Length: 502
Image (cartoon, rainbow, N blue to C red; front, side, top):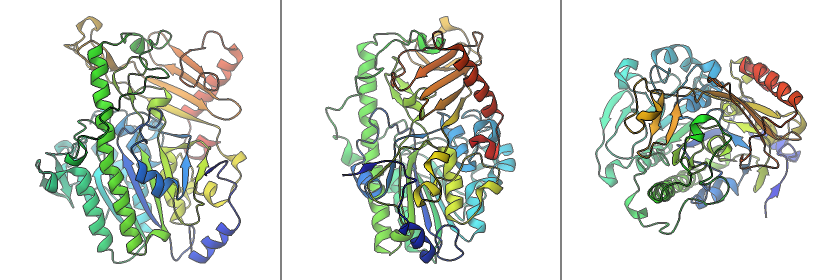
């Protein structure tokens, strides 16, 4: 049985091991790093249930984090945060469009030079990337497929957003088109196979390998062998499922409750296909770790498994998407195994996706505090170099809403400014679905959010008594607490570097 306690309480032998192995911070024998980054994979509504091999090979052989979060619930801003270790207000990627700075020329000029692979490459790491990078990567207005982001020696980047077939890769800066044959084109398997080839041809460690499969993002195209999996699975009916968000911001209040049978059938089918696509990722984990083991590399390799953000299927009667402030959209899976990490650990510290980059730098012997990163390395939590009491107790969540200037054909009555609308006129986003939140964990377990809209709407949740965020207590909570949270939010929105975790 695993144990649930602070990861700061590791045994002293671990430090000795790192010294002998020349571990993090050493000049010789630096560990390898593998990051497997899925797309839209939730934690709160069962997204890890299909990952039996992953949980056994990484979680049971290392640490599982129960409080891991994305600092923004949308692909391009979140992935930009992972790459740079920065909050969105510092890397300035607002949404998935070029106009929102997603993989734009400005991003390439001012942010890519400070992404974590650049630092590792300078430390002598061979660096390999395969799969989805940023949603607008490869756009003709942003350098096309010829642009290879700084820091990557081996580059197999997906052009555009997640697909499983009929996509284009930038293979070392050359256009490589793929069709719809499973054996030759299924993207999750292509990423797996090319990562295995990279490992086989590896001339020397250390290496950094990032694998970014399309699952479990739409269009949820399932590998042939898994099309009949989970025939009776449906979206969970507990918590906030099919509940009206009567005290939420206006966009959530617009959702129809109860949902129509058609909508529920649709989201149930999506939920099932999401699980089915993840089975190929589970195979990826098994094959990659198996190859690392057969090559004698596994014991010297840190393996991280996480997602860019969460997801929802029917929570507060929103059919399918992300983009909301609630735990189901911002909480993510995070499993880590590697040199000296005790098996079957459950870690409770709040870890953010902006902490991944600083952790990779720490493993490679680079002092992340000398960079522009807002996150902090959580390697010390695993190797007993710091006290749990000195870890952060709160953090910032930010999102900039997207809305069309023209009326959506599905929802003309709502007027312009909405997007991601369904035929029953439920819209998942809008230009004023723009918010910033303070999320606290520990003795004070709260979420406080302010919207940039005409109402200056505020949502506050007691996450201890109301983990499903059913009751907005903004109008009943002590005003002094609201003032305290407002001041903390102001400070976090202006933070940079170390001030973001002080």
